[in-house]
Image (cartoon, rainbow, N blue to C red; front, side):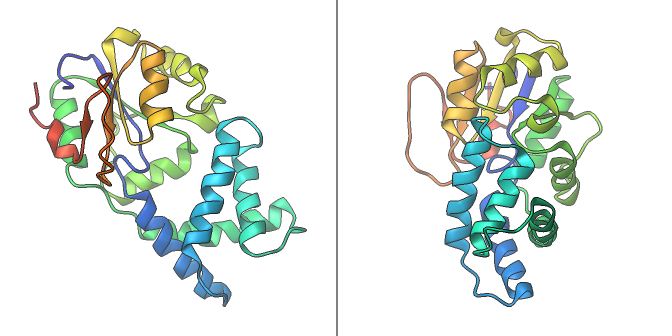
Length: 224
């Protein structure tokens, strides 16, 4: 699936690392530190709401973090500075709970062994995403970090992929994207002329003739 491409781009959260379970564990521990009842389902809903707003350019990356904290804590008048300081408490617990998905290390190493360029195409910030990769043992100095915050364009904005390809220096036809979020990681790259693979860790059963779907990253190992 990957061998015929010069460059392989991987999404990070939900693709290489288990964001959902880390966020759940993180918000439970953080809430307990704050002395409030944990509500991971509500935190997840707020993340989806505000991160989507960020992806569509309605507020900054820092702004979506602050908005989540204000709503979760029922403190609408919190300054952004105060909200972000509180968010740091969540981040500490979240990162401590981060785990890689099965097959992640092996598929990255396979790409390097094949001489491919490997990029991390993420809507996060480079510093946090690098920390996740280091924490989970996935970091390699050969990785090319393609982070939306620093690139000033977020998936599914086509400009994200234009800028990513400019950085890695390969054409769309020589590039494949691997990720779990259909609009961002599959449909957007396909529209940009980039092949894509959908990673369905949850087993939703989504299929489409335009792209292959896998349940586990190990399916990419030695696949033609």
